[in-house]
Image (cartoon, rainbow, N blue to C red):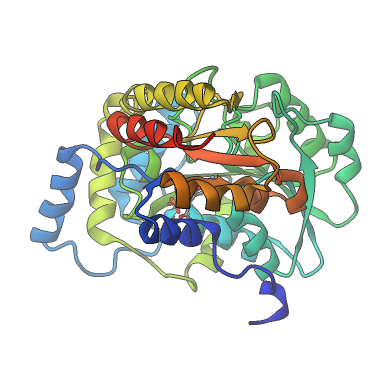
Length: 380
Ligand code: PMP
Ligand code: GLN
C-alpha cells in the first residue's frame, strides 16, 4: 500500500457489517435500506436488460438520464442545466467525489471539509495527493465557527466540500450557514463541491443547494445519486452537475476510472427521474416511522440522540452509559445485545474527538428497529 493510503485500511462499514454477521446482530451500522425501492423502477431495469441495454453506454451517461437529472434540478431548485455539458453520470456519488478530487487537486493542495465527515472524502483527497483541512461541527446543533472557517483558508486551498444533509450527524445546513460559506468561497475564489445524496431525506428544515446562492453557480460542483432517493444503493448510479468547464475536468478523470457503468440501471433511474417528484417525495415519509422508533428507543435506553434533521442517521453521546470508547462500546453492544452501530470516531480527522459518539441508522423497517431497541434492554 502506498504512503498516500497508509492508515485507511478497511472501511468501517465493511468491518461493522462483518461484525453484524458474525454476532448475528441487527445491523444499524452501514446505511442502506432493507427494503428495495419502488417495483416500477426495478421493472424498468429488468425491461432495459431485456430490451438490450447491456453494452457500454455513452461516456457521459445516457441522454435520458442526463435529461432526468437536469429536470430534477429544475423542478426542485429552479436550476437550469444543459444536459450535454453540465451533467455527467458517474458510478455512484462515490466516483463523482473521487474523480472531482483527482481532476481538481494538485499535489499539496488543501481541501476544507467539515469534521466529522463521510469517510470517502479524506481517502480520495489523499489519493489525489492533497490534504484535508478540517473545520469542526460541534453539537448540539453541529454548528461551525465562521472564524474557524476563514482561518482554514490558506494559499493552498483548492476547494471546500459541503455535505448537506450531513453524514454522519444528520445536520441540514441552514440558509444562513450556506450564505456564510458562499461568502468565504467567493471572497477566496475557491471551488465548492457539494455532496447532496440525502437531499430528499429531510425531516425538519429544507435543502438549499449551495449552487443556488448568489455567485455560486459558476464555482460549484453538485454531486448526488439515485442510491438513497430511490432506495437502490447497489445500483451505483450517480451524477455531478455544474459549470461546463468544471464538469469537463471531472469527466476527464472519470473516463479513466470506470469509463462508464450500469447501462440498464441508468435507464431505470432515468425513468424514476422522468416522473418528477413522484418517487423522490416518497422516501422521507417512508423512513419517518423508523426514525421515530429509533429516537424514542435510544432515549428510553438512556442515550438521547443529538439533533438530526436529515439523512439515514442519528448520533448519540454514550458518556451517560459507559466509560468505554465508541469502538469498544460497539463491540459490547454487538456481543451482548446483538445490535451493531458505527463508532463515530472513524469520521473524525482526530478520532479522539468522536471517541464517545455512535452513529445509528434508521434505514430499516420499523419492526427491525423496534426489535433492535428491545434487544438493547439487556444492557444496563
Ligand atoms: N456521500 C455520502 C454522504 C454518503 O453517505 C454515501 C453513501 N451512500 C455516498 C456519498 C455514496 O453514494 P453512492 O452510493 O451513490 O456512491
Ligand atoms: N453511505 C452509507 C453509510 O454511510 C454506506 C457507506 C458505504 O458502505 N461505503 O453508512
